[in-house]
Length: 415
Image 1 (cartoon, one colour):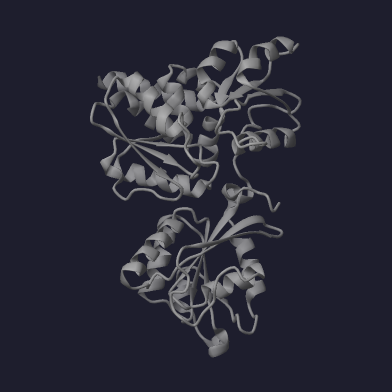
Image 2 (image 1 turned 90 degrees about the vertical axis):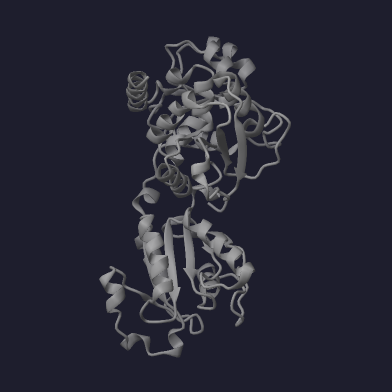
């Protein structure tokens, strides 16, 4: 399980003031010296991440953050990095050394509550006070029963681990399916996996690997081919596959080679519903028809890979969108955990499949886009729409196709 991708791990953010012992708690939880510990306030600068197995919960990712009360111009940058962590936090630990919270801790709690993030309150440095005799009426009114910890005396760490396990969100314990609900046990999924310059040497890309693994876990059969061998592979089969899944970049060729009686979609569209919200992405895709010259399109990538000459996000999608709309559009790219504050400045947001981040971060970005009134979609849906095969790509998802048809009718009425 140590090789579980970070995007599939429960993200646990550790927040609080400077020098309340966040890093010390992380080191105790992981039983390693991950974060630098010092009496000097503000030792932690950029968020520090540690992936581990927290049994019986499974794979988790702890994220230690800078203090929210940091000072100066450098402190402001640290706080900005901490704010980014909220958008990908599944479970928050708020650390204080006071029995009751004031404006700092309350503000952190409100940020979590707004995002519907479960919160664990921790009172650290219990060795310096008689914590057991203290009252926590204010916290209990918020529904929080604080965990009392003393890192120095190694007290309360096991209770904190137990609290983390009990507080894990249900969606982490029962994650949505990638493809197993579309391919019954004993049926075949045919995967089209182009091997191009962006494919990692000696490996397949993460969405392909995760899709294969889920199909095998589901007792389904898997066949993987490159796009050039697809026609021959279909002819070799004595029974059609239950589903064909392709890399979005090969959508047009694969759509031409696969009979319409066979379901077809892409890895990116599968991940649109796994990591995001397919309903919202479909509605966002429809906004492509409203793009005009001068409009700004934001391209978001969860990873920070080195872009090649024919990069999908920087070259291919802009080219296909320009060809489809006939408009002179402005494109801007953000990578990793960076996401612009001025979302309202854009006319459309196009996100990658999100295989390198978690569902929480994608949902946070969808919420920000909705709040700003900006449509948001993803790579696979954008490519399918631009190439004129959108309806076919949604065939395996009856509800999604219905949403598209209803949106298309409303758009037609509006015209």
